[in-house]
Each structure stands twice: as C-alpha cells, then as structure tokens.
Amino acid sequence: MATRVRTVFRGAKPPSRLETRFELLWRAQNGPELEKEFRFHPVRKWRADFAHLESRTLIEIEGGIYVNGRHNRGAGFAADLEKYLEASLAGWRVVRLGPNELTTAHIERLVSLVRGG
Image (cartoon, rainbow, N blue to C red; front, side, top):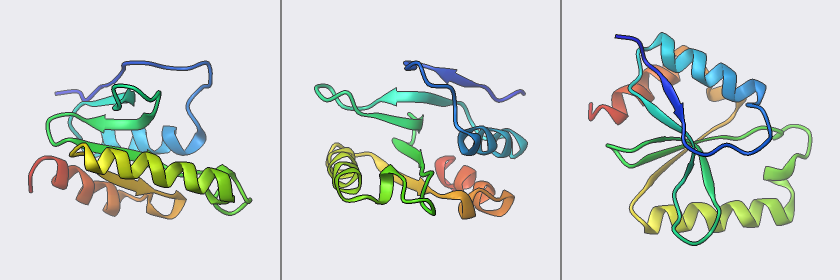
C-alpha cells in the first residue's frame, strides 16, 4: 500500500529541502498517512509541518539551526516554545527533528512510535 502525505493547508512557500528529505524517508519506511501543514490550534494560526492524527503526534522539521536561523534566534525560539507548549497542553505529542535526525534509523523508530509500537 502506497503511503501518501496529504496537504490540509498550505501557504505560498514550497517544502524545504529538509521537509522533502523527511517525506522521502517516511515513505521508504512505509509510514502511515500524515497531514502536511496541519493547523492544530483553534484560534492561533499555528501549523505543524506534519501531523499523524490518530496518535496525536506533531512532527516539526527544524531548519536553519547552524546558520542562526529563525528557530535559534531569541524571538523565534521564544515563539516556538509558546507554540510547542500549547500543542502539548492540547494533548499533542511534539517531535522536533533537525538535519541530524533525518536518518533511516530515526525515521524507522518514529514510524514505530506513531503506530503504537
């Protein structure tokens, strides 16, 4: 059975190189269907890069961590903390992946986790 990633809400920006890499690895491990750019908060416009709805798992691909990108500058880091706290308080499990975590071994373990293993 082919795995597909469905777009629920997508802004104007195309997927990043890291998001594309994650999707390829996820498919190679026959991961279950994910929602892409999933809006998880009823009021705020926060989106997760990927969501597995059945297990209530949000997957965030963190880029720019070695080039002083948005995720590791003060305001961006603080905004991410608020977003992840709200997701956790709403019952979501938040998994954050950087470039070093985008490996077959890590994605295989993540697929197992969302499947309940």
